[in-house]
Image (cartoon, rainbow, N blue to C red; front, side):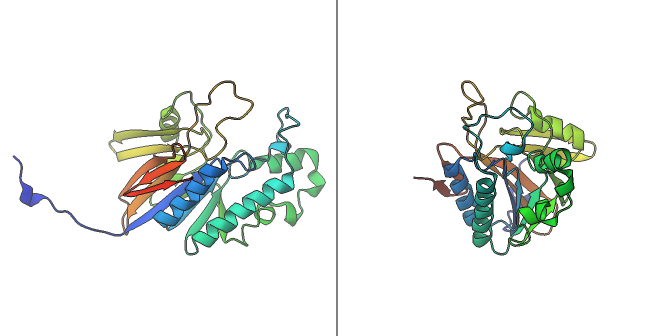
Amino acid sequence: MIKRNRIKIANGKRLNVVKLNDIHFPFADYKAVNVALAACRVIKPQIIVLDEIHDFYSLSRFDKDPKRIASLQEELDEATEFLRELRTDNKKARIILMDSNHLRRLRKYLWSKAPGLSSLRSLRLKELLELEKWDVEYKDVFMFRDFLFKHGDIIRKFAAYTAKGEHEKEGVSGMSGHSHRIGQHYSRKRGGFYTWIESGCLCDLNPEYIEGVSDWQHAIGLVSFKWSSKHFVAYPIPIVDYQLLWADKTILYK
């Protein structure tokens, strides 16, 4: 029987965590990146999680297109400028950069090609990326209130299949990038209710090494917690035609 008097509708402050991933400077989609930065200005997250902002294409073990090889210093400069903009806009936010397969390209390159240089402090990731200057933490993964943020190491063919795989691997709720797709998987078990999100990407959707149309999507990820609770709502927010819709706001690049 419906009992309206049993329902309580309460206002409450939220703790928002935004995830920006797979930017791959200098192969970013700069319009999508600007929309994502604007979204952070609107949402005002208390925590911003980053992964795969660098590409390190010139250090990869794959055959390289000479036309695509940009200056490594140029890539680092673009990523640093991004961190500067992000910190300027979000002075009080906790910003966390997570480890990823592209960041590991530098370590692997030094170990295999220049082991004698690998001990130099200036070539360690924290120093090279100037993380301390912008007050950015560096972590392998980030667990917050039983919600796991990671770059990800699973890729399956269809959207949300990767999310399902990550949840099955980790056994908790979480969010990952890596697949460049938007997807969300839900699960209810004896331990409770779980969800896992694939949070899209902010890189160029038309790389030269993919024939036809890549099945990638621009997006950011959002996890909104009750202020002093583990209770949350989590979802990807798509960026379509360089427009992002959140709450009653439309953020667009024009």
